Amino acid sequence: MRSKKPPCNSGCPVEAALEAIGGKWKGLILYHLKDDTRRFNALKRELPGITQRMLTKQLRELEDEQIVDRKVYAQVPPKVEYSLSEFGQTLVPVINELQVWGYAYLGRKNTNNRNAS
Image 1 (tube, rainbow, N blue to C red):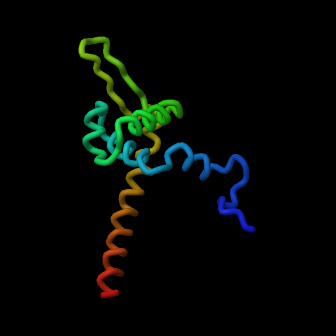
Image 2: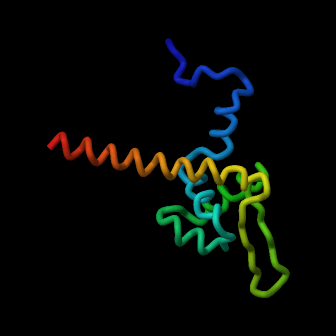
């Protein structure tokens, strides 16, 4: 039986990158943080369908990977902001290219759907 895992050796850089930023929500979180700092509730509003628990989990994982910085302000009520870390900023060109590719893909997909009708 063939393995469904991509043929990547241990330490494969593509596998490592997808592990760090892959999944349903991390890419969208990074997209919303690429241009500006966001508070938790602002991110939650920009990501309809994500639960508070899942957003917290994804932000913690991105913080653990040193891709996202979390800044806590000592005030009442508490204020927490999220932004891309210096290392996370290196993903901005990748995110921008994914956006360009996504527009092309959607255009191609819509063209194919119209031709099938």
